[in-house]
Image (cartoon, rainbow, N blue to C red; front, side, top):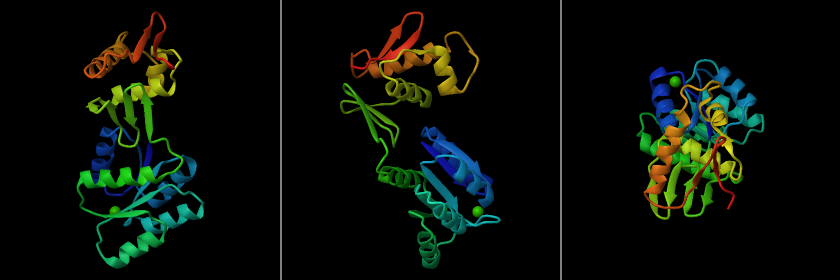
Length: 222
Ligand code: CA
């Protein structure tokens, strides 16, 4: 899931970006409305988080401009102002939800999940045998047990599932999951796969992630 955050306050932006990345979202950050608009028009996002008080184009005008481009991506507005007038203005500009700073990260995340779930064309769940992945909240379950995965373990699992039935080489995983075009260590991928298997293995004896000797790893198509 790709999120665009437009926020000029570095402290707030850093807090939001770090928190969302820990939840396995990919976040682009723009510091003003012009930069935000350029990014919004050049990339496909799943959600926009717009601060209202921005230098140059403010968040409300930015939201209006995004909607004028027929971009229907959900918009969550952030503001330090807490008056009914500002809320109405924000929502009239095409925003889907509104939060007043300061807010708890927990509530912020819950609002984001709700907005992302609203998208009708989005795949919100993946399943494979007893395995179930909530791709909005990035949570993994085996039967009713939640499997606590680290971000890269989650990314590997989703990547292999999306490519189920195909053998994926270590080099391909390093490139697509880590963005490395070199191998930082010969067993770098293997260490993550081992840990992923151990965590899945706590709840199921099914061999979800299979090794293909000399080639790489795969999740079977059946
Ligand atoms: Ca601001």
